[in-house]
Image 1: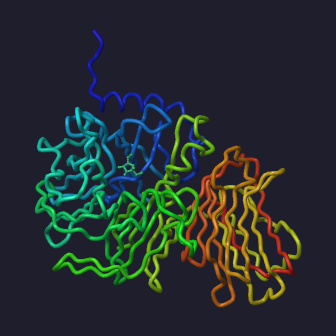
Image 2: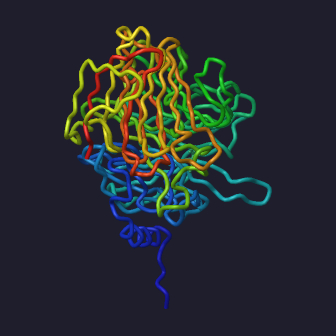
Image 3: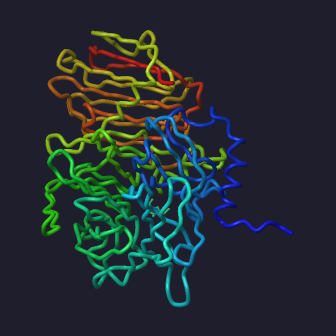
Amino acid sequence: MPRHLSKLQTAREFEHQEASKIPPHARPGFHLTPLVGWMNDPNGFCYYNGCYHLFYQYHPYNTVWGPMHWGHAASADLLHWDYLPCALAPDTAADAAGCFSGSAVPLPDGQLLLLYTGVQPAGIGHKELQAQCVAVGDGRDFAKDAANPVITAAMLPAGYSAVDFRDPKIWQEGGQYYCVAACRHETEQGSILLFESPDGHTWHYLTVLDASHDALGKMWECPDFFALDGAQVLLVSPQEMRATADGEFHAGEGTVAILGRYDPATHAFARQSVQAIDYGLDFYAPQTTLAPDGRRIMVAWMQSWATAPSAPCAGGRPWFGRMTLPRELRVQNGRLYQTPVREIETLWHDKVELTGVTVEGCAALPGIGGRSVDLTVRVDAAASPACRRFTLRFAAGGALYNEIRCDLDRGELAFDRSHGGSRRDCAHTRHIQAAPKDGVLTLRLILDKDCAELFVNDGERALSAVLDTPPEAQGITFAAEGGAVRLDAVQHTLG
Ligand code: FRU
């Protein structure tokens, strides 16, 4: 007699068996990857019972997207992750077609509540339907609410779609629970709806916080909503954006931070500014949590739907997808800034510090190189009047390289991985504004084997990308055009 295993037990047994075949060196050093199979959005990011928990959209059985489960990992420092067993499988009437993205909040009784999108299969005369579901547990095993779905399309005002209604982000405030969820309106397109609950189980609709009005893409996904440094921040991941003339947004999926004012009495949110969250090639669906020390920490899927099919590791490995390095957020000068979590300093070793270096033409610098590094370069534009263009090549070796080109006069930067080894015809370059501040342009580049994160001017802009370049390409070189460049460089090897 074959044993009867539930969908969740089957997933747990499968991932346990298959994961043992993946040696640790086949993964990045400190970026979270799925235990096995496919990963997309971060879910349920929270601090619970003394450590961070990070769940993720998960298809354990393949390296391409499929019926969505929730994978699960926990970490004390946001860098070293321990895998926990698969948390949710699509095994009830309310979520039989998938446990889509959602969030988590600790309850007063010490349990953890997960709020996620349950997808119901298409039926005669209707497409798949999305509604919000609850599961409660001890941080390892979760029981789904018998009343699921707890937030249904019946609660939506006229014009909102039950086909595109997903990704609830929950928080607790003033004795109540709130969540924002994304929903598509027939004319306003992507919209963010606010709901309220006394207990996390019984919900009612409050208001629409903001909408695309068909200007910032079509459907919006994966909202987050929080106060930070005196501002209110709404994060969304829009689908089908048009590129904007000012270069802020590229075509396709994007990530948008809307900074504004929020009135908790009326629940009215008024926009003040709109910006991209990350300007790179591989970044989507960010989610935040509050650290015990008050920091607002963000993590995102280090991929996008456009880049996933052509990503370097598609097909070649038993896992696909990764999270960004978690980042600390702050609001400064009306912008959202982000810097790597300070915990990364615990990985620092073998510091190399070079001050007042002059580079003419092209040069390698003593001690600078590698693929697991935290490198900060301060380009002294004020002391380099003849230098028009500064180039930093990394993951370079043989004919392959990736590069950051800085046009110091125009205050523009290009991140270019088109010579990094890809055989795919997709976007490999992004251009961003990057002007020197008080005469200095600061670039902080974090490499973790085959991915790169660049933070410009202390986190004013960030840019994430997965690299195709083979591990032997360890070189980092510097080049100046037009005239010499003066710079300082500090490198820490990571590991
Ligand atoms: C965003 C997203 C979410 C959805 C999930 C499904 O990447 O499309 O809107 O919940 O992925 O895996």
